[in-house]
Length: 276
Length: 276
Image (cartoon, rainbow over all chains, first blue to last red; front, top):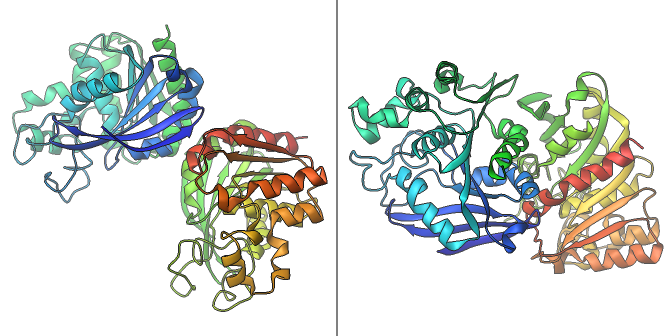
């Protein structure tokens, strides 16, 4: 593992590291905020999965999460959103290929050789983190924005007992029925829609739900709301009686200003679960 | 005035606006955060002046100031750091020309026709702001980072009674004696160093001081500390017995992670003065 940078922040350290990833077949970069408490022993870890076009860096510099993580003594990890590099397949569109991994393991050419973000975030990066840093594997929570909210919800429901709580900012909520989803799931997983169901938060809520607290914020003025389809997820949650807080935030759009505005409450929500 | 963007943020609005500037002879862009309270009437205004290479955008997205400004009902303005555009002089170096206005009125060619950031920040932008938005001209405070800390300190001491409080993050503290200063003051103001003294915070503290509270944070691991020369300013403050809080923050560098880490305390410091 290589240290790209380390900056003192909020009494802790905001680091950026890279490592050779077996899952993705390329070097992968991630941001990790360690609060002061990590000097004394393992601390809880909140995963933050980012949206389309983002790298590890966007949320790390724009979401304002470190202030609240420091307050609660929680670490934050900011993974990249896809494999990257010259040998890695890409597409001219912003919503496919590099920067748009969708947190799945691709099975189709030309994506299958590198685009294994599910394994990366669920298996490989945890090994790197819990081996290399003072992090408590028994206390994890997960959140994300847009495509990252989709990743957070699908991972949380697929690994029962691993994440104590899940939240999302304006998640892609029903990708099997949206242009933010059908295009990518088809490219990465093929035309058989049966393989897509494991990557649709709405379908997963219907099928199994999440055994812990769930918090979802959505801006009412989100310019992408028709692609996100929060109404499908909310309906599934209501039908299942899944414990959840669903908040339609008046006037907010899809930007990091929206994410930052509610970050304090999301981190506090996860802190309740992580220290409960 | 043209609205570039408006995003709901922390219950208020983060806007970006541009206008034809007479002082700078070009279009100028600024960011303005208005808290929810501005819907009901004029609110206090905290100026944030940015450092070398920055536009209006860096601090607006990376300093995490809106969270605290919203808490205190304070507006934030983020001016650009120089005139810009095709007809505006520039230099290949990052620390001269566009992105490096140093908050002075240039008198020397080729800078004199556009580089009038002192007049812009002290005279023209205030007129634009107090005419166009619900801001209380009687309640202003000022802060800044690096070159912007230099701007904040020199403006505050040059307009007694205008700013109720002044703070700075790692300011260029003694530019007449530093390579971050001599080069630029010479280029913009000419070789007669007598003209430089009005733009040196250390010399201004010696000459007149500031009639209000002053807060300065400096990272002990700042990679530019030899250029900033905080020791000169601290010495001048001590000699004058200027009321001030000076904090050498262990392990912090020059980045926005440093700025963000202490933003809560800076905004609270200014709120005390603005509501006092």
